[in-house]
Image 1 (cartoon, one colour):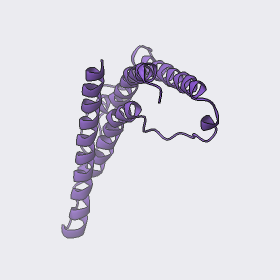
Image 2 (cartoon, one colour; image 1 turned 120 degrees about the vertical axis):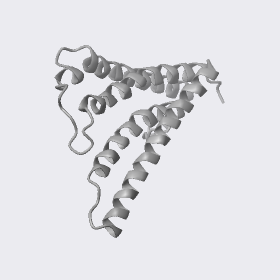
Image 3 (cartoon, helix red, strand yellow; image 1 turned 135 degrees about the vertical axis):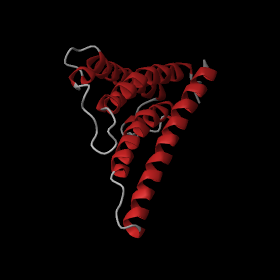
Image 4 (tube, helix red, strand yellow; image 1 turned 90 degrees about the vertical axis):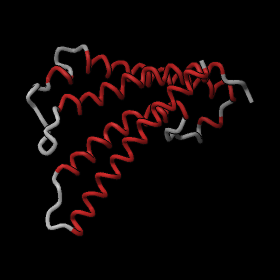
Length: 161
């Protein structure tokens, strides 16, 4: 199971890094074009926005597995280790259930995110079908379900210090 977690973490991290590189590249193109060219390409802002969205969708899952989300620990640290572990488990379960709720609302609901997007709706500059952009929410919360299940597994199998 540890090998699966490491592979999953690596995949999420690498796809997030690719999104970051693409984001930085498109912003650099925009900055250079505005500075040195008479006109700047109009697709770079849209590409940067979409790449940022997908970067967050994948890198957020790596952050779950690495326990890198910001949290307030001052109150939690006052409790014994066993209570802290239970609190973390309750939080992971709650966040996983919330991710599952949003995922199923996006996918299965007749009024869900994918259902309400007309197939002809495209982005302005890139002319990319918007269903692919809205799909990032499905990806984010779908993988959150997996990430929080793995995080719960990691919490339960972690050795006490």
